[in-house]
Amino acid sequence: MALINKHLRWLLPLLAFIIWCLQAGYLFYYEGLGLNVALIDSSVNMGILALAIWGMLLVVNAYPTRVGVTLYALLIGTFFAIAGGFTTWMILKLIFKNPVHHYLDWLAYSMPVRYFSNWLICGWIATYSAIVKEAETIEKKFLKQNDLTNLHREAELYKLRQQLQPHFLYNSLNSISALTMIEPSKAQDMIGKLSDFLRRSVTRDGQERILLTEELEYIEAYLSIESVRFGDRLKIVYNKSFDPKAEIPPFILQPVMENAIKFGLYGKTGEVTISVDISQKDSMLIVNVTNPYDKDNQPSRGTGFGLEGIKRRLYLLFTRTDLLDVSKTDTEFTTTLSIPQTYA
Amino acid sequence: MHKVIIIDDEPLARQLVRAFLQQHTGFEIAAECGDGFDGFKAIQEHAPDLIFLDVQMPKLNGFEMLELLDEKPSVIFTTAFDEYAMKAFEANAVDYLLKPIAKERFDKAITKWQASVASQQKQSIEQLQVSNVYEGYQHRIVVKDNGLIRIIPADDIEFVEANDDYIKIVTKDGSYLKKSTLSQVEQSLNPQHFVRVHRSYIIPISQLVRIEPYEKESHIALLQCGAKIPVSKSGMTKLKTTLGW
Image (cartoon, rainbow over all chains, first blue to last red; front, side):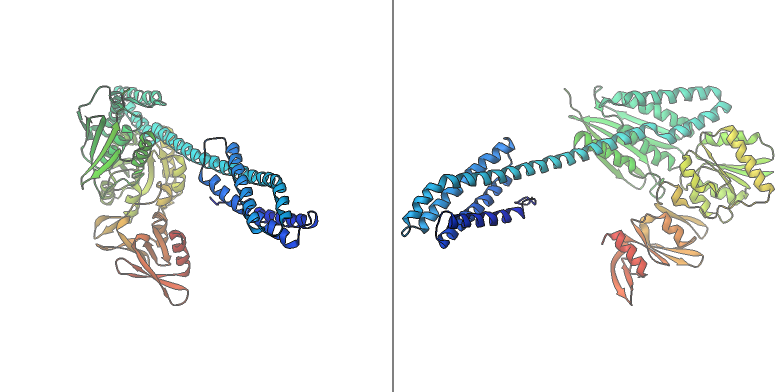
């Protein structure tokens, strides 16, 4: 930030010049001092005052404080007004040491007025720039807050999209439609599964953390629907060893599974095995999801978007960027989630 | 009898189409396929009159499969894509059916097709604007190479050159010809990564090494692969905007 606020940049030198003229004129005409004495007096006075203002602005800008802004500025203004007045007095006394003792008497007599006018000027400038500075800080804070709110909103939107998954829903309904003609009992079964899945999606909304076992049930509901859609092509192998109280934020693991299915099942033909490995290390829950993958044959739709969203969400929740990791070979794609466990 | 092929990666979705179709007379289902690659082979083998085609499928998606066919049959799309996206290629297909497919809607599509056949109106799907429909830009280009189907990842492209009715896609493993226009390719690739620098050339930004002035008002772009590509005046402007100069 500029030392002198831009509102004051032109005003200050102008003000200084006017005061200098007025003072010199006043001293010459009304106080009857010699022209050179009047000029020297007003120049010294103005020079010192300018220095004091400069120093004061440095201090105001360099030391933001928790104390009330105006009070702080007034204190600083007072200090510099006194320091400036005193310095002016000393210098003028030094310059007019011998010849005009009449002037020195007058100088001593005029000091209170000088202190007071210095104090008025310094106090006003200090207060003004401190208030402007404070306003800028508040504005910055506000903008930052805005950014954060936007991020949250995006996460919310993403969550919503995740939840609705229109394509998944439409495709499932299409399968049910087919089943009503071919195998009505299976259609009924599938409707039950779909309702179960949707009910779980809705009730999970708004919860910050849920039990991992609950999330796995939810995923199970999702997978059972996919199995109906794709026949017996989909196989899931679990390897679970975790604390039954382990928790996970919702909409984190499910999109990972969805991704695995998108790349594994939608991207390949034939039987597909997805393995889910859950373990716990100290206070960290580690989930590994591995799916087969064909590097030349990725479904081009929405590549990587899901994972990017999960990463952002994890960052918003834990302010860490190292909680999602992916690795791939030519045939396998592994997603690793690390979820910090905080027990009350 | 009209020959029909159903291409969809979900068995139940195929069965639904089959069941709906069996209620109409005069159709014979020649094949059912689970991915675009099988679909391509089956179409070449059976030369069907009509196909039911899903969009999202393994190996080759529906659009890519169509692109590869020289003789395109009439197409009815069956997909869960929303109507908004489907509008884009409405004109190019006989019809599009949104999943879940309603019986009534299906019958309407069949009637529509029968009418077009009766009036000898050949449905053309030559100019499929893939990019506009298929949620964003293509990450790959599919070409036929000596009877083989080759999938070229967009990252592997060194440059694309117009060549009469064909385009030549140059990669480090060789170059491939495809019956298409440079404008179509330009539209399907991400403009953040690919720039049409000349009437006859598209280059990936990542390949760019430097640009040298050449004659008045034109430039030459030197690529990582060593190729020198002419850059026209308007191409230069596009490059500048993309690179943010």
